[in-house]
Length: 150
Image 1 (tube, rainbow, N blue to C red):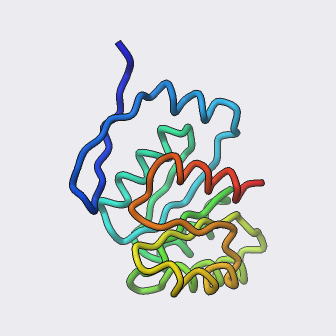
Image 2: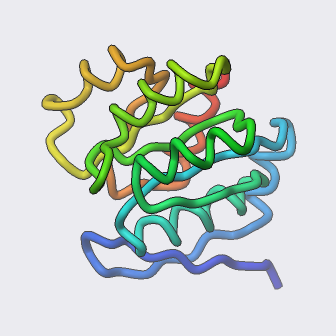
């Protein structure tokens, strides 16, 4: 019997299953990344972190841009996945600050649940490598990570 993973779609409230072996096969040829996920929505954070772990990555989570700046000052991350709109410090400001002080330039995937046309250019101007819209789907997230890391 195949091993299944249960995920939820926040916008529709529906649950869906994915076969873990299919995810493991897609991640098997890729390197394991150290990822910082910054999202103020706890449900989005939990689901996205679970997807990233299913893809074989190590994930740290924070709730806002200010905490992301602190975390990036303590740990070297391969990739940042940043919600655009967060309290205290938004994702765009956090990425600009991290890049100005850290001396390292991790790859960045920005995510938003808002109209993408509003933020897309701002995200790329701040140094984003990829831009995705919520709700995140695992295949789209994996593809964005692959593009960002190339």
